[in-house]
View (cartoon, rainbow, N blue to C red):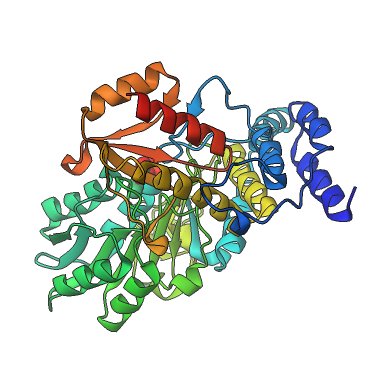
Length: 431
Ligand SMILES: Cc1ncc(COP(=O)(O)O)c(C=O)c1O
């Protein structure tokens, strides 16, 4: 056994408290870990080679049942055993020791994972919460304009629409195109002297278009706009260096591509924004100096970090689980995970494109705009009927009625395989 492999197995088994992962590890001891680099796959190549054995080993780290093909990571990413075991362990320990601390590990891990300061991370419960904090906390007034897409998930749409309803900001929209350059131009064209913010997704939930966040952030900086990114599909599906991306705010969740527990999320607030973004919900750990006595009633100051946006008692086990998910992805390698999920998506897209007389492809083919989700429509069948048949044939997919698309969305992540893609393509051909 090579040294690297020994270290990997040791580290991975170190995640697994309890026995759930042990049968998989013994099976894994015959598997090569340093498999063929993913970039050596041609996306239409037969899937069996050394690298596939490694990914089979990764698949075995998930309890996700094998009698169904799960293609809906875009809604919820199933957790691997190390995450589940961490949550279980935390729950038992807390109730054994009578101690409910321990969530700060998630703030530390996320900061390292995203290359930012711990003081710039707020721990939220989901993406929507982070977006609400930004939408309400920015100094926006009646008539100020915010640029968004027509492909928003309700989690990004609702907070900004609510600020429009209650505070009178104006929302300007564009329909995302299939190339990064076009998308940047579309945003540019909407900027007026009244524009104050750009509030767009990193990756659209409808057809998985990756927007050029770095360029959008640079444009925003040039025009003195707040750049607020809905990163629901970014964390864990793509390598993210938030310093390099340069946006002001980035909200995401642990339960999708990071494959962490439901109920976990984070909001990144760039240091320069900490004094600009006002906290509206505050409590323990969010405020620093305050007095409420007969003599004085005053909130003098908030804590100086992004901790001011999260407050009160938090659930340590789920955040420890989120930290374990970041460890799991880091151990395999964030870039490697992103490449693998993309290799699967690319393969699916290419095979679907061969059926072009039967399907309409909605997702980009431009590599930098293509993520880990593919959207398409069937020319001869309504999307809901397809959805019903897919479910009867044990495929878990997502239908997209949003933005009047009436389309089908397939998400691929590291627990999926080329075999599953082939099975799905056979199914599409059949229907
Ligand atoms: C693009 C996008 N934004 C926001 C959300 C809402 O995320 P959360 O459930 O973490 O609030 C989702 C959920 O699917 C999404 O796809």
